[in-house]
Image (cartoon, rainbow, N blue to C red):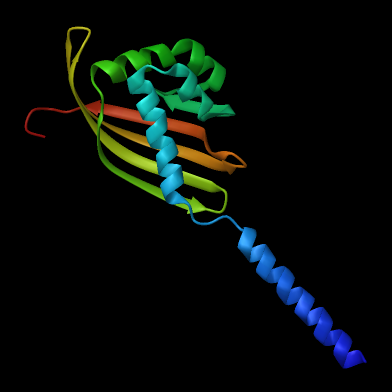
Length: 154
């Protein structure tokens, strides 16, 4: 009887282990990348509601040596970011997404060329976004932007 009990317990444990593996999240870099792209597309469309929906309630935005909460970003820089993205949409050069469990980070570089408010724009940018997986999909927890002006011949 003891051998039979051990076999039953072993079978139950094996079944539970398979069940746990089946519900573990997959390495979902494509969906995380899609969230990053959706944020940028919302800016270009001028859709502040869609852009904010992709930001976690406690998101932090780092830019120009400053730090803003989601609410501060919404009231301070979002409108200007939309206006800029619509005038001179950045051209994505490269994006790399890494997923580790329910956290992902996406790093990308862009080139932005055009005219904004009568000023010639010729810059390269770098972006790092940290995302977390929720029951409804990926959300952006943090954004860090930096850019520099491109010089002629570079």
